[in-house]
Length: 250
Image (cartoon, rainbow, N blue to C red; front, side, top):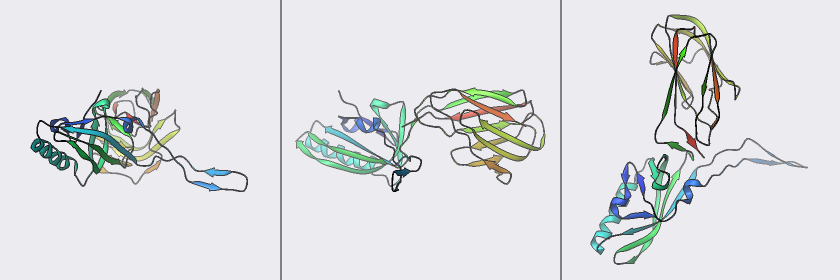
């Protein structure tokens, strides 16, 4: 059985390309910097290094001229200097943000080329093609809601809190009680205005403008495959909360 790939939203099967293996998509790696002590090795928290995605491929065509044209087209599509979305057919529910590295191989017949297509994902995580957006009413203070994502890696969601009244000089707390990560923000929010907490970009905006002066603590992440209890404190009881994210995969 064989598959193809989509890169930068272009299906490479259009150019006769089939991926013979998809093992890079399921490989996972963590490492940690180690310090050797007299009686043991000490390691800090494990890190996620960049991920090399190497696909064994074959390109087939009805003529030698068409085969050469297909190879030129594949190089044109993949040869971007910036990272683009890469979606293997075998895992078409998720994408990697990957940079083209190389296309190596040989023409094995007048109608076929066989080789390897290599990309580098500096962010090694894959993300769901379809995002999740959950809405909740903030009808109590404090208010705890439950969000249960999928995936296999921690997610960094965007929390959008919309005020249902004027909130003056509040000390807002947003906590994931399952991770213990809590963000504290001090300020005022106008009626109907949105306070956006982006855990991926580490930024808070108030009515569209950055508002970081009264910020402390940690941006709360989401645990994959588990109930996450998000506690909102000091946002009155008339607002709403939206939690938006994409499931992440190691």
